[in-house]
Structures are given as structure tokens and as C-alpha cells.
Image (cartoon, rainbow, N blue to C red):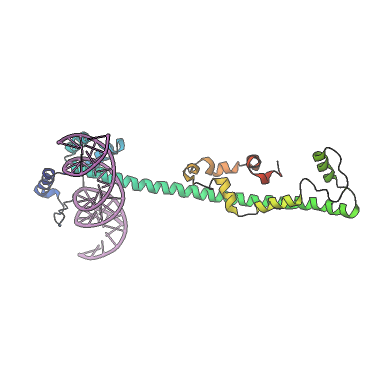
Length: 238
DNA sequence: GGCGCGCGGCCGGTTACATCA
DNA sequence: ATTGATGTAACCGGCCGCGCG
């Protein structure tokens, strides 16, 4: 804090050197004069080394620059505030870039998911067709035989109530999960579920997960491998 | 050891002024 | 010459840590 003696010293100096004072007035006695370029350079240089000044250094710097210690202290306070404000802007830009990157990645994933759903539907139809034909003709369907053999250890009999291991009911469950709202999937893929881990997902805008280059190398096989270990609805593929 | 008190420093916000387009 | 925007030195009030009695 500025004591009375220091205050009086500041004002005495300010009012005595009229040529350096642009204006002197106001009820708050604000006597502003901008620091010289040389003073600013020295202050900036010191700030780069340490954003907080030890009292002895503050006194020394003030003496060297012909300023009051109080002025140096205030300059550092203001500088820290300005730096913090700038830093916030930088952080915001990075976050925004990462968000945009994640959004585009998610859109790609969504399209891929749609393509997979269509593919799955086609396969489902392919499975359904032979079953219907067998019901009409009374013949066994090869796929049913294979499945029953693998489960029961013996050749399956041609019974209409025998269900394939890949049941349509289950497939529909799978589809049900898949066609559920995107937010669940989004959360699982991007770690948005539960406690926010925003900081952990942040990557530099020029690299890491968020880079389009990496995304270009993204392989769905890896996705399936990862998913198989944690998502039951991918059992179908495993 | 816990407490109140004064002091000094910092911070967020604000004011008043300088500068520039 | 005037004016609005921007930058900044200085200030204010509140908070916190520290030393001391």
C-alpha cells in the first residue's frame, strides 16, 4: 500500500514537473502522463522474466526508470490484468477451433453410422429372405444349420421354431440402440457423458485427434475393435 | 495454540485521460 | 474541429496472507 509519505512524494513530483504533465485536475487528482517508450521497454522486459516483482527489484527498477515504486507496482498489476484478458481470448479461440473440429468429426461419424445402418438393413433383408423361402418350401436354410451346429454341437433339425443365433429380434434391438438419439453415441465417443472432461479432450488446434489429417486416417475397423470390448450391441460384429 | 488487529499486496472493476482514425 | 473508439495510468474496495502482541 501507498503510505502518506509516498503519496505526498508522488504528488509533489507530479505537480512540480509541469512540463511532463499533460493535464492536472479532477477530484481524484489523476495526473496522467504516459510512460516513455524506453520505460515501457524495460517494464515489458522485466515482465517477460517475471510477472510479479519482488519488492527489492521493484525499488531498483523504479529507481532505474525514474518512476515511483507505486507506479511500477500499478504498471505490473495492470499488465497482469491485460495479459490475463489476452490469454482468455487466446484460450477461447483454441476452444472454439477444437469445438468446430469435433463438430465436423461428429457429423462424419453420423454419416458413417447411417451408412452402416443401411448396410445392416440390407443384410437383415438378405437373412430374412431365405427364411421365408424355407418356410414355403419346407427346406432347411443353410445358415440356420450352421448356427445350430455351432451352438448345439450337432446338426440342426428342420424345425420351424428353431431360431437362428442371429435373431431378428436381437438385430432389431441393435437397430434400436443404433437409431437412438445421437447424443448417447456422441457422449460415448467424445467422453461427454457424466462428469465433463472438456480439458482432457482439448487438443492443440494444429494436431492430435482434432486434426483433419488424423481424421483422414481414421479407420472404422479400429472403431469396431474398440467398440466390441465395451458395447454389447456390437456383439453382432465381433 | 487460538484470537484479533494492522499492514501490505493482489485482483477485478472503474475512472479519467491521451491518442488516433 | 469534432467525435467515438481504444489504450492505459491510476484509483477503489474487497480479500488474503503474514507477523505481532
